[in-house]
Image (cartoon, rainbow, N blue to C red; front, side):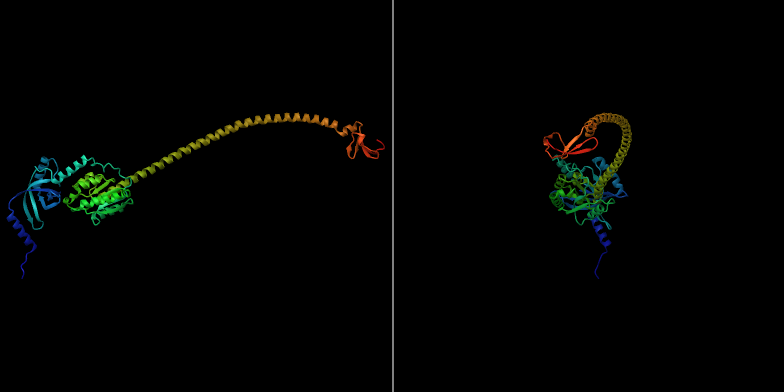
Length: 412
């Protein structure tokens, strides 16, 4: 029958082997990453080593500082170095090598030399920030105005990242129902290709920059050591000078990368980025509602004032109209009286004139003349004014006051 070992037996052999071959304590130089402290006060972290040529991580090891030791080391380290104990520190540690049957290989830190104050990552970050500041681009993206309605979002992340799905879900299911238009520009978000992938995505967005309001660079969780690409000078410089506001959600609660520091706004997670964009929309929405309410109230006030003015004008108009009518009525009575007098005067004058004309007409009338004893002789219906037109035998007619007489001309 084949001999075999259980996993626990194999782990026990490995543990014994490590204890036998690494019985002493060792001073080790490493960089801290993913530092965290649990409720019991134990500090868990990852120790990393990076290549001096490429900056890539070449070694990792799980490490821990037990509660009693950490309570002594942490305040001493912070007092000596003037900074908080956390990720990105280059430290010199005194440690023992350990192998736990359940948790595997680990390094138990017993002491820290405070002489190593800044880790390689932190120092490199500061050097990049100083360079960007000297070039005058460190604050450029922060100084861009945030669009009032950042709805058209160019998203740089991995298409399969869980953080991207969380980002979309948070964005599309916002309680206010704001509409967003995210466009994915796929990029590797960990590993050596991250820097070139992000730069390529930025180039693609820049080619159509007028179609977008903001750029969101997001990634899900992961070890702090995987954030090296976001401490790249090229990535930070490209984002700092990008013509659209850049929003990042790439780190952990305890990590700030150079990219975070140059971005227009830094959020901790993809969901927090979505919340920020929703907040921007909510802010302008509230402002519009306040403006609408203000316009409504001011319109009501103006209408009320206008109504009061209209009532006052109506009353004034009525009052002035009555006064004017009364005044004009008196004037009309005077004019009417004057007109009547003038008409009577004119009628009297014309009546007198007519009477005179009537007398003249009566004195000139044939009846009046006939009454005086005169007569009118007519020939062919016309009054005769001379006998020269008559011939013997012509018949003439003579009118008297009373009656007419027909005669025949005997001689002329």
